[in-house]
Length: 598
Image 1 (cartoon, one colour):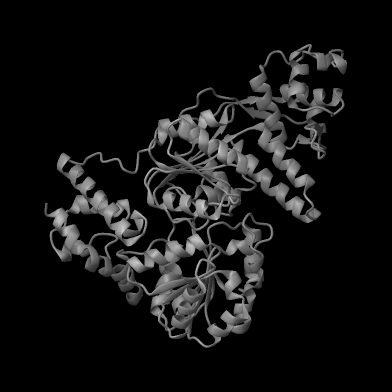
Image 2 (tube, helix red, strand yellow; image 1 turned 135 degrees about the vertical axis):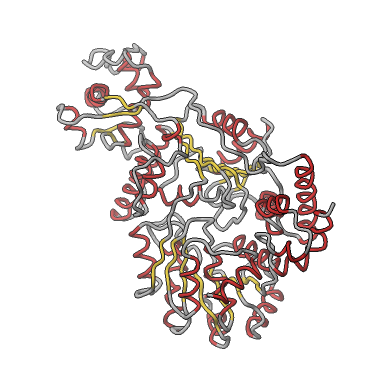
């Protein structure tokens, strides 16, 4: 470990490892295989980058996205580490140069797309090049049950077959027990050591609200809690992405859209803006984000329900990678539940896939409808033993919901579904319950049924919440024909017969939680220190432009704050600041000391 610790300090500028990093690095450095499960922002990259620098040969890193490779290589170049990527973004000549340098052993790390790695040409190149290790990043992409399945990942078992003596490290931030087993089987990692870090991201505040007017609620959230911050807003469809981004711009938010249907150049330009500019809000489909290593994303918002807790965890994990306070916000409504269940039922997938998808969705619905600490439920889903002590940093903990005995309301709702023939959607059923004598109700003569007008004690908004929770609890399900009708399930029988009680969450108006402390909060800084902070930020922005990299690749905010707090006056003192390695000291030392000495 002395060698690893020296590399950590000298190259990366950190004085101590976090969590299980040291154990993983030691295991891989001596030639062991392993599977590493570590939360986004937990320092997974160091687990293979440091062993790559300790072992002889070139480390080949399998990465699923071009953006991920480019970001990692740009950051490594800033650290003085010999690295490159090989993917479809390179011209034929550029790719040839990379391959030639790879054969000559001129790299410490080479990032490769799985499609490229599996070609006979590249397999041949690897056979003639000393290899330090294989790192398979985003390893959950191997799972056919996952949200980011990549068919090429299944074929990566070829690495074990062709290069049995080269250690392999598979890494992911999102894998439940089933997915972990699949990763091990498909990648041939039987016998590999498994390292599971805590999935907890204590700096992220989880907040789920009842959607009434999604875009307006989103705008209120951004303006009240994250004005001027960088953030990501996820929408289900391309159309909704475009409309939401345009609407936010009209309301004064610096928002841009991103989805797979956009022109490639425009999409790339928007991604670069998000990475390099401060305070940009990216409105996107889930096509955006994997491998985006922007540390200062202060919030991730969902205007549509994800498909699983894995998807939700990975997407929300793109917030607060710098360890500073961030928010995972979601507006969730009845339509989300109906749409997701119908999509599963109407898919052409095999029954086993539908069962798995339904189970995953039900787990996410339970998280959304939680009346106990959301973080505890999230951690338990990933098999982590969590205490029953509230986390104190989710909306349920900060503003506990009121739970009421909704058994009678549930019986009325279920009875209404039955009495109207299980042929109608929520809006119509509520009209019947409230005794609204509409033309449609008259047409179907449901103003004559026994459930007509029996629900007047609750208003429409509450009834919508009741129906949503009954669907989430499995007592109702949408029809598979797409008509919007609700159907009774086998479990609803016990409720109707009075054999099972139903407890529901009370809906709250204008729910507010304590504001987060902003990442750029300079509380405690003297005026002269605030001036120093601004001078350092300006220098960082100009330097990043010169180098063609995002500002955070030069230095994170945390490092700038340390520079202000410690105000080092010599190179030796500067070298002790977190994030200042030897290469950055050599490149930036004179400029930084000039600013710090004032």
